[in-house]
Length: 263
Image (cartoon, rainbow, N blue to C red):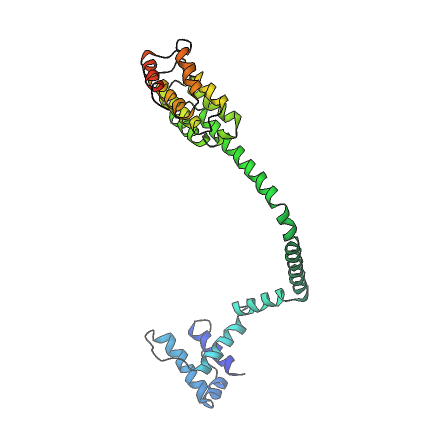
């Protein structure tokens, strides 16, 4: 019989797990150990007085938790932590950690050694990536241009303006909007996008051939673009064949005014 047995017996009695308190032999042992007697007295007060302010001695605190640890069949959190650490730091796991660390080190070294070689191909890779991005942008812009929504078509024109410089398909899509879209705002926007391109002889002729079936506002803007960026031959072609190009009377007057301005 030891102190823990006596404390356990007192706790069983206080919790109602035992009908009798300490045996005569236990009481005799307590009478000979003042520290144990004080600890038993404190435990009893804890159960009887909820407002107790007295704190247990460090010896009682240690022995009490030792007893609880021995009485329970489940390992406490500290034991579980110890077991977990023991498992992970077992030789087989240490070997796994070492192998992973070695593979990481080899991979890092290999990548580091290949860095200079990779730089040689970086320009090619960047160019290929840029081409993929341009293709994706063109696809998005074309999808918006083909939309039934005028606002989406306007957004597609804005998105595809820069792409049309190097993309013949986008260029042709903008030209079709200029010539055939039902909304004058869409036609003007397409013309603005086309005018951002270098005005080659081919594009100039395409604009000259785009006057037919246009509103006055669009024809005026076409004339402005050709006067600002085109060759004198474009305005001369329109002046001599205004009926062929279906210039409206007001557009013919405006063309005459432009032709008489000094270039």
